[in-house]
Image (tube, rainbow, N blue to C red; front, side, top):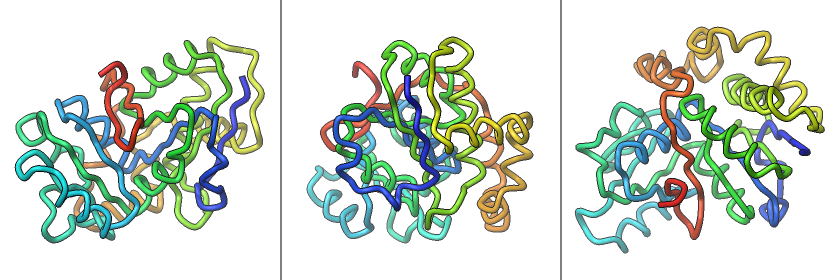
Amino acid sequence: MNINLFLSPESLDDFYFQDKNCVVIDSLRATSVICTALANGAKEVIPVATFEYAMKISAGIMSGQNLLGGERNTKKIDGFHVGNSPSEYTPETVSGKSIILFTSNGTKAIVKAKFSKDLVICSYLNLKAIANYLLEKKEDFEIVCSAKGGALNMEDTVCAGRLISKILEKEKDCTLNDGATAACALDREFGGNVHKMFRESDHGKILTENGFQDDLEICAQIDALEVVPVFTSGSIKLLNN
């Protein structure tokens, strides 16, 4: 298996992902929200790259059957039903609903990888489930972290390193690019206490300053959910649903 990791999607062309398998990670908080929403009964999550497109899609889905979710500068967008905190996506709120999700980085990364042959969504919450899924496929795959501007994003890179390490425990015949090798090293150094790593990361500090410290604790729960969210035909649904 060849495993390539990219610190950010911004340097990649959309068509780079064509015929490739891809994993997108935005552990604080978009991919954690997606996993939580689907685990709690959401029909699907529709990721969008712009606020304007979120509003356009929302107008085309029957009222009462959809929720607008997401954030701008960490805060819930005015007029949206829910923000970007996993705790908002309860069964009572999301069951049976189509969720149109717009976030600053995570949904943009998913949309960038939309031409992938197979695109799955990963967070700390479902690391084991994604690792097992990839091990069963035994095919090359790309990992895209959702950092902005091509800069290293600590929480997503370390999460990717943990995912790769789980795969290497069972599949020794893997070739890693430099990004994947570096992610494994960062996981060994900083991944022992995920909540602490979140708190000390740049984005974790911003979330704490804006009152979202509880989200760090929720998103740090390793393997809390047995879900494999798969992007297909414009939306994300649970595997085999």
